[in-house]
Length: 226
Image 1: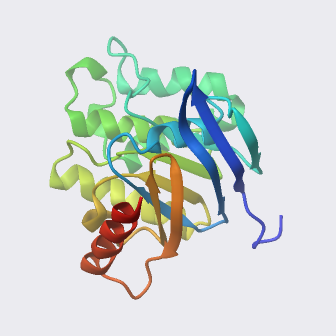
Image 2 (image 1 turned 135 degrees about the vertical axis):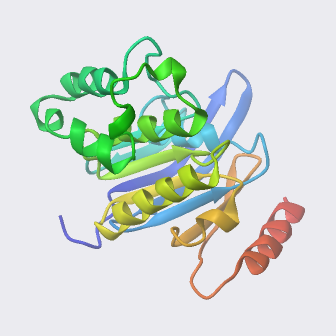
């Protein structure tokens, strides 16, 4: 695949729930190494957009093109509390096939969970559970990783670990899309920011050369016009 070819593209994507339109004509592209931060007020459609892009929801209209494996980390961890961290990853590795089985111990170590690998997930802190959920999503070595509020409820140490992994993924050419209100923490990882409000993607703009204050001012401008 040519390096400039998008690995994920949405073309005029709309999603309705009954008569309520949650997404309206959303178009975007992600190329290898892109990291898009999706911002918008609560109810803007961020979670719905991620789920549609991941294939967990069907678009009501429009087209989605995926060229590669997709991983997603949502609000729910998708982990089993009664199983240990290692057992959880081994279970999901079997679902993904032989390619993923050798990655279990590697991912436990990378997410700082090796020492707790044989403890049940039900006893884990929020930060540990989130790191394990990211490890689960990374088992098939996805080309595209979609994350919904990945830093919410994490302490500084867990946040730093997650941010370091996201930075490494982008450096390896993986494409990231992150829905989050935590702009300041993610500024060092993302390459662009998308402003979503009332289900419409108002703009996608690069973050290079801009600080948090400038982007916050732009966010207020975009949402005020909505």
